Length: 303
Image (cartoon, rainbow, N blue to C red; front, side, top):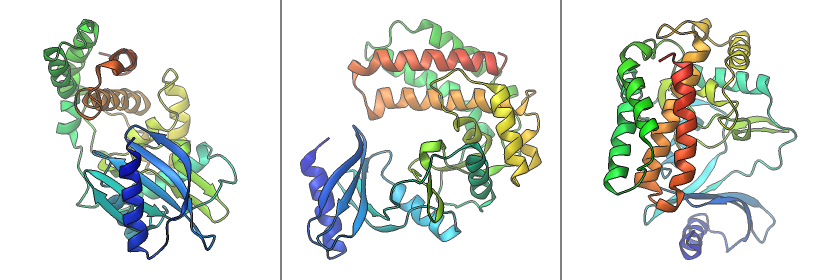
């Protein structure tokens, strides 16, 4: 992380809101983004969030959700410098508790009921069907760079899924189809004194809502279709469309959602590996994650 760049971003933001330089406290920082709490001399606080491409349009998404009535942090101002986004956001304070499954189901219902926004990228059936082929293209680029040479099993699995994709991607546009948060986890749902707010809209798009529901329990543990089925039923009970439980692509809703969410994640990880991160030192970590996800997808999509 370039400290000079983040300082420049914050200085520009403070100029826009006519505030002096604040004290900074790191909340979470990684190679492509960071979150800090900043305190101004008058005691007021804001969240300073910064991110590089492809996460540099979150300010637009947050302003959209504010216009559409989705509970989220307010954007006070934002700037772009050298391919980086900087934002000053509303400080929601410390959560009063962690989000649970009922919170997640209720928040997903609100999100998925919101009308779609034309500014968001769209993932229709054609795009979903193309994900395994796109991942194979990333693998080909990695191998041309003399990387990922020991990933024949990944190639074979992706090829099998690509061949089955025409059938398995059917049902993509069944309801709920619209806003997809794409980073929908308990850590992205802030439960405060004034209710809940959704965080982290950097990769929001228009697409199949079940991908959000499949992401809620994360991907670090083995996928659990029974657990997701219970969550889907909670979603419907909270007011979500009953079509969330409908069979898609010849599969139960929970297996379809988990399988395609894994493929969506695989394509993203592989694009990071060749485009956004592009660091051979990370290859072993990425290969391990991708291998696990494609193995899960083969089983879930019954390929």
